[in-house]
Amino acid sequence: MRVSLIVFSVAFIFAASACKKNKCADCHYDKAGAEIELGEKCGDEMEQLEANGYTDTTGTYVVHCGH
Image 1 (cartoon, rainbow, N blue to C red):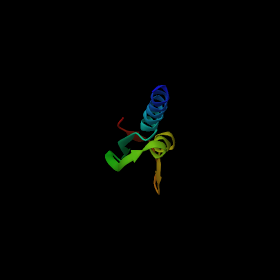
Image 2 (image 1 turned 90 degrees about the vertical axis):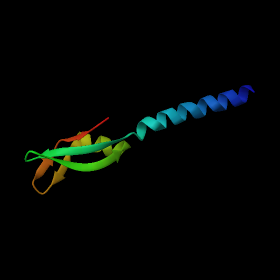
Image 3 (image 1 turned 180 degrees about the vertical axis):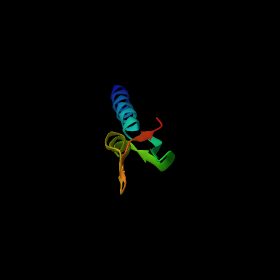
Image 4 (image 1 turned 120 degrees about the horizontal axis):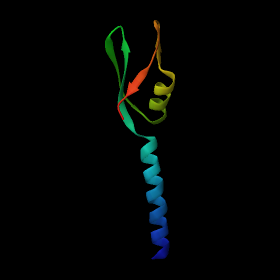
């Protein structure tokens, strides 16, 4: 019984931390007064977009993702 409780506790903690890492949100950037949608991004990809921005042939833009 005690072993089952420990295993369940460890699994729950792992699952809770994994959920945060894979959090998803819709992302966009503003270009020439228009909001350009990038779609739903998750986890590391979303964090990198927010940190580094989105780059196209006309420049690099700040990305906003709804959390």
